Length: 132
Image (cartoon, rainbow, N blue to C red; front, top):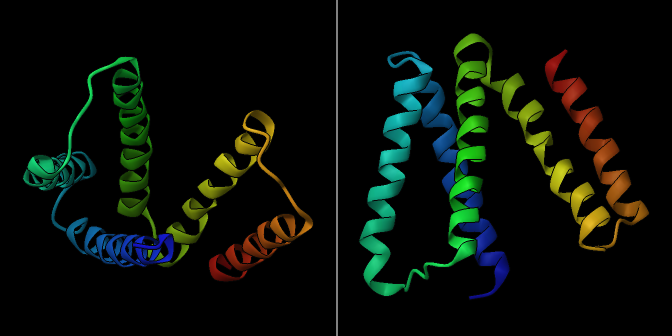
């Protein structure tokens, strides 16, 4: 499959996940919501395990650490949703995309064009408009 199909799958999956998270946040505190959501992810991945191989090497352990970092972000996101409006929190937290773009430029020598910078500025404007 082409990467655009995977992007569409991610967009739809995360979109419905975000909506479900806001609804479930009315009934579950942030920690149990994060816990059960992540258990759901583990179950889904275990079902896919027979189709994929899972190597155990030093990068596997870096991936575990990366998961811990993601868990910190997820829990912060759930606490934010618990306290505020989804229509404001989603755009603000979506700014996370700037971090890998900047780090990719600094450490991986990926291009950072005027078009990228323009998109980032437009994102900031959109967040301001959505949250005011």
